[in-house]
Amino acid sequence: MHVIATAGHVDHGKSTLVRALTGMEPDRWAEERRRGMTIDLGFAWTTLASGERLAFVDVPGHERFVTNMLAGVGPCPAVMLVVAADQGWQAQSAEHLAALDALGVRHGLAVVTRADLADPEPVRRQVRERLAGTGLAGIGSVAVSGRTGQGLDELRAALGRLAAALPEPDTGDAVRLWIDRVFTIKGAGTVVTGTLTRGTLRVGDELETGGGRVRIRGLQTLGEKAERVSATARVAVNLRGVDRDDLSRGMALVTPEAWSPAQVIDVRLTAAPDRRAEAVVPHPGSAQGREAVVPHPGSAQRRKAAVLHVGSAAVPVRVRLLGGDTARLTLDRPLPLRTGDRGLLRDPGRREIVAGLVVLDVRPAPLHRRGAAAARAAALAEVSLPDAAALLRWHGLLTGRELRAMGCPPAGTPVTGDWYADPEHWSSLTRRLVEHVSRRPAHDPGVTVDAVAQVLGLPDRRLAEALVVPPLVAEGGRILPADRSLPPAIARAVAELTADLAERPFDAPTAERLDELGLTGKALAAALRSGAVMSIGKNVVLMPDALERAADRLAELPSPFTVSDARVALATSRRVALPLLECLDARGITHRVDNDRRALRRRD
Figure 1 (cartoon, rainbow, N blue to C red):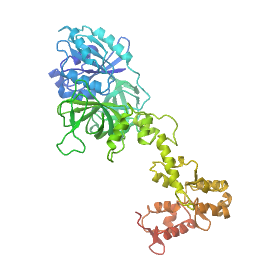
Figure 2: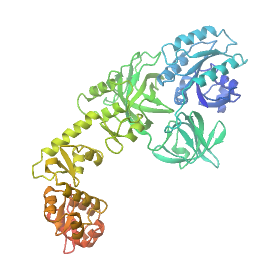
Figure 3: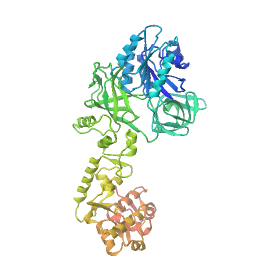
Figure 4: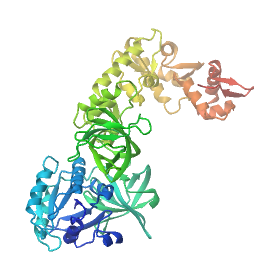
């Protein structure tokens, strides 16, 4: 199946043409049929002689309903641009073309209607001229009459060629279905419809929308029930787990954890044809009533508000110019966006397009310092469309899942686990770690891995471990210079003890286990001097961070608590709990309330 949207000026015969092609009535509302004018989105479909199925999203042409038009066109990969032979190019022809170009629609067919009322050739030439310089330049054109049927066979053939030329969708990609209609069916519940442009939907699948999880109860496409629907397709989705009032046009159904909900985005602005104006939108830092100019190639009108249109969504935004053709948008609500998504900014007051845009980053860092905006603009200017390397250059560290959710699958080898790093940033972290550890006194036992992660601002302790390269080593959860490291045999024994205590950090080894590990006498003394382990009593050996971890665990207890309470909370024996609490007392972490009870001192 292929999905094609209509576009064009009001009363140029878009709905008539869809009726003639499909035999279906695209106008769903009685008011639309009474007035003879499309107000909201309409839907119809047909099967070509080749067996190819085409679905049409019929959009309104009146300037008052451009928001509805954009909701229908936004997700569609192709368009049928309609211009009447007896009226020629009109105001909404120009605005619809500007929207299509801004949204990146590059496949389409120009259709000159009412060929029975006027010679279509002058208008065909006019359309070709108007399309020149846009993404739809050079598309085919057909002259038809929806009333008499003239040219319909030629139109069907042209639509078949258009469908054959459309790129194959990625049916294995994560789903993002922009919702364009929400309703309820008695006995079925909540139903949403939309144009599926990527991925595959299956009955029973779990999806996310508006931060909540829903499950697909049933699917229908072109009036037929289905167990699965793959892109590209018009689809109706019966949902379980959500009320009709919780959904609306402009929301999206997405594969869980595969998208990055974005509320602040960096974009590149692009000019829209026939919109050569200087746009004015509210600046985030401006006072009430003041205006900030968004310089855009070709502007002239002054605008005081901007709405972002992407997919079927229309979201108010605040605009901050960064420099050149780049800007930062702050959305009124988050949207599931990716790098490379296209949209447009529109002034709803003047009903004019301000600019087209391409999303460059869906998780930009805050701009705090003086000159940060100019520096960010320079960084964005280095790429036409970011890839994984560019995103890593801007963010430093990202997981493969984050990169895919942002629209750029990772390349190369992760530094650890699923973490990828910008090479320059990774080298900088390595240098900082070496400097931090080497500056410490010669008798210092080293720095814990968790402390290193905190000092370097790392989101995962595994990254700190992965940074350890000569001249550093990691022993017993600490990082230290290699020349201060333990002999191999003792280091192996400490590593075994660390593994023993991984799940139960307060279950100190028995004297027999210490002997088995070889951690007795001089070997144990060396391990204690290095800080690889700590002793809290005779033959009671734990990891060096045991006191901090014990304090965290005890903080979860009602205060004051008994030795027995502590023993249970720490999952250990009285042999360990008593000396551990005495050490905590000596450090001022806990204090006695009476003979048997203790309380944790306030920890800032």
